[in-house]
Length: 396
Image (tube, rainbow, N blue to C red; front, side, top):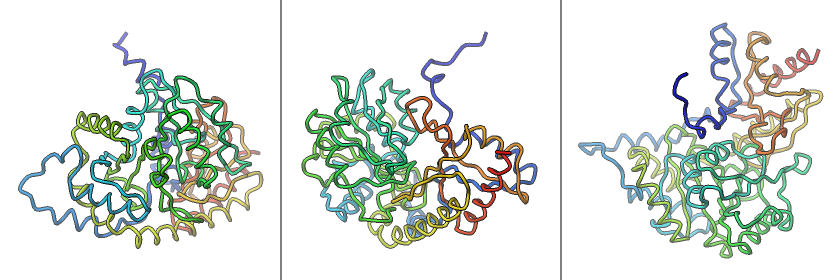
């Protein structure tokens, strides 16, 4: 018997967003066009300033960046947050290798092995994977589609708190639901965190992609000043997920010292990309307003298409570029495999993401899918036509 990997590695789930790649490739080898609505990988070009800034790099070598970040880069983050009423200093920020590493560093610094973090499900799946890697228990509060995935009041959240609880996670705007938090919901989370001395891990990756209301930042709330661990990323708002640049930010000095020690262990965030994102952070508005308008058009296009499909239920997203749709099937995972292996309509099929793994609670979300509207409106309209035909055929 071959030597076995660690239990930690074996317990990790395969990403529900990425695990169907082999089936996609097989379908494409058969000549079938696959509409890829599974991953939040924007088809939009990043701002031209990004590549222009990288081309201006003229040092004779390409060295490690400092673990606390390149000075000009952290200064750009400071300038960026100031637009949302948040006054930070460079020592309040550590650049990370994308938003994913920001999440991991936040979780590692907030909780020890065996301790607990409260999450609202469905949630971004990386939190589940990182929890396994760190031996942290996620305690879920299930949100309901019928209630537009709204958070419960402070009393309901408080029921999940015990002596092992160390933090509460919020994702605003939300991946995978597209919901956005109200002032009342934010205040409920702050109330519980302050009462029980908990961290709030505030994931604001999609901050500026919001369709109603204004972009918000939890760091601007004085009551939560020492509780908030902000995780952020340039991937979505600047359409450059391949750049792998994010950050962790907090006013809590002890927390940031811990984050920096963790950052030193992994050395640094990418040098070229830190330089490339400086002009984007310094002047984000023109670009993010443009792409938000485009994602609003795409949202409306996909909602119009879904309304034409019998048995499909969904909600109107307020932000990000995702929605959760409940399909008239027993298992969305089996349906997606069927789409890729056995179905095509006019030489086309589509790839969605099954939602069960976005839940911590077993058995939830089995007939749901997450749809990322990262294609243009014409492609989305055609994809919804394909989905309608597919469901009719599948259910026969």
